[in-house]
Image 1 (cartoon, rainbow, N blue to C red):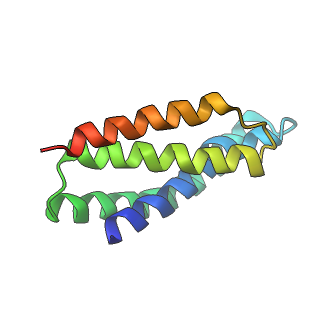
Image 2 (cartoon, helix red, strand yellow):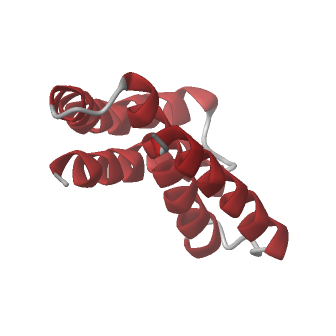
Length: 109
């Protein structure tokens, strides 16, 4: 569970690092890059331990990656709707369902 919580927290930081600057079109590119790198530093402080703990705890690297992708999609969807004020379409739910199918396939014995 620690792995999942660390991955969730790291993805929140990374989503802000990658996309928050889109709200600020007037910022110069260098400012967006410096801010993004500053935020991403904290993402790495969480992502690296999450992957090490998960790998040592029995997850394969492939499993860790697919978990991370599902978390990323969920975090991004919440971010896009709440922070960027983008509309949410039903096709996004279908895409998410397909990704959950990938999780099922990844963890199936």
